[in-house]
Amino acid sequence: MTQSNRAEFRKKLLHLMIPISLQQLMMALVNASDAFMLGFVSQDALSAVSLAGQIQFVYSLFLFAITAGVSIFAAQYWGIRNKRAVEKTLGIGLAFSVLLSLPFTIGATFFPEQLMRAFASDPVLIADGAEYLRVVGVSYLLLSVSQIYLCILKNCGNAVLSAVISSVSVVIKISLNAAFIFGIGFFPKMGIAGAAIATVIAKVIELAWALLVMMKKDSVKIRLGWAIRPDKVLLRDFWKYTARSSVTN
Image 1 (tube, rainbow, N blue to C red):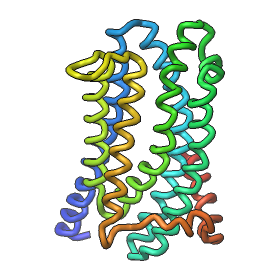
Image 2 (image 1 turned 90 degrees about the horizontal axis):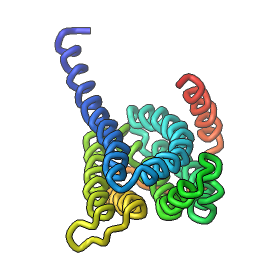
Image 3 (image 1 turned 45 degrees about the vertical axis):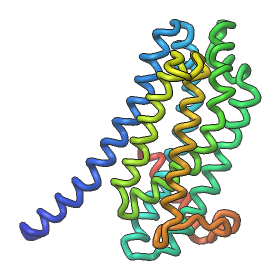
């Protein structure tokens, strides 16, 4: 590899690494802001939301496996400019991520007390955690679409845009956290429920922005046909490499 090629490679690597690192940092700030702000409400509120967050942690592990598979194939097909195959991959990823989100969304929305009993025995923690889950459960479904599309953007030459969308969503979440938890300005003081509402609003904005990007002329599109009737060969390979990647990680 010549010196000019190495310089070009480093430039492209930094172009990819910096936005991804920023994206991960902003995601870490979400949990930190919840813990910091709810600590001022009460220790029970902090503990309850921390325990309720285990539901999303489990969900995120499964979602990570799907995004890993989407990343492998999207990057590969985009590299050879096969947009059709990228859209097929997107369809498969969306089909499984949405199906995955449904039991978590339904469980958190309609059976939050039962889920909380798996992590706590204190009635106060169960009640507070259930209040949070009942609202935040909707965000799991929103996340199943936005994260897969942002993953596509990241692997199709739009890593910076993907990071910007995620980062702005986090900033909105943190700002609304303060507004709803403490009742700043004209916002009502809602405590735990306020943290959940802030999460849902931030995810709605994140998804809406991602879909607006998709509406651009040359963007990778969500084709429902590829989600309902996936390419059988690609589907087989997708699961093979997704499973291998999940085991490795």
